[in-house]
Length: 321
Ligand SMILES: Cc1ncc(COP(=O)(O)O)c(C=O)c1O
Image: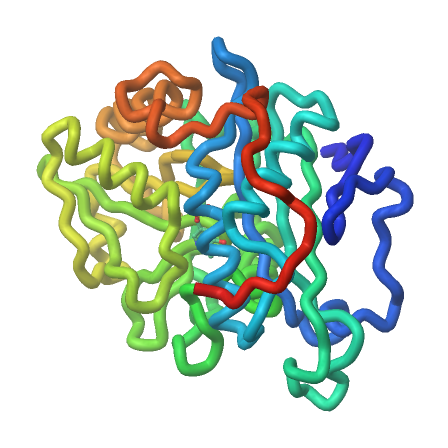
């Protein structure tokens, strides 16, 4: 994977890729005190378009607020325009967009109020997060030996950089064991989510997914629930046990990076027919259409990059919310 681009947007301006650096003594690198987003931009007939951009930037601002920042230099609307500007300046037709709000200039005594938020947005070309064959064949997962955070320990609703130590422990262990992805249980022992995706179970034509109690409220999760209900599938949010995964007709995961991918095997047990199931395939297809401007919901969910910027992206003090 190449993460190279021409420019990275940092604190109000486009900076050449090589010059977009942070000092060794930036607190985010030591304590994980940052909030980030993962967003995708897709090629459409009307040029590149960013999927649910404003909602991602609102979640970023909310994550920063949950982390404890009391004011930010940019609003969600400004960050959305900055993201479009960054994609356009780099000339990508499809790319991943990675904004980060990070603690800088202080906070060494573990008080976030003694530092300041810095903001950057990088873009790079990134496809097939779970591998090129994942879409059709599905992938193999196991239940991680690591538990997902309790919300009183780390705030799962916020995409906080430090939260991803937990994801990295789980993912690394699963990949070393020969699996593609890790499924994490919540502190009560019920299925929570994967390291970078939310999880769904299909049984008897109904789609089940854990409630948002101990998970990241995925924007792809919301997209899949909406598309599934449009297609007439009942979707139920309820606790899911480990053995309910084993007995499912289909299990799939979804997230911005991975998109929508079936799990063909969990803990060495074959799920359904051992490949991407029919319900998962129909959702993959609707998802593919919606992100590429070919679905009746595309208009609301896509922000086209090549339309003029209508918000000033220069810094100013913004109080989150
Ligand atoms: C832990 C976790 N759960 C779920 C998701 C899916 O969220 P989204 O669909 O908004 O990308 C992600 C990815 O951002 C994640 O990191």
